[in-house]
Length: 98
Image 1: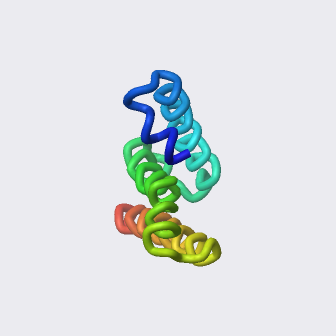
Image 2: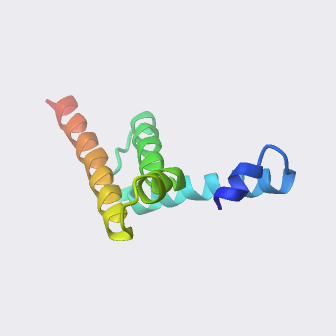
């Protein structure tokens, strides 16, 4: 997959596949975390943006390949970050209600 991403600027097929992958990834994040996401469209988009970064292939690569973490450790870090984003979002919603 990283190779495909590296080719997307030069290969129209790779560009199409990567673009579709980004759309599907964002949809997956929205569906997976949907119940924990804010309802307001702008805030929801903000939190989805953050969760897309947390669960992105490059985040996996940074932790797994560059940092040499085990698969379990990478999953742990991604869950940690995802929970932090969702928790921060909930905290912001609570502060806005007060």
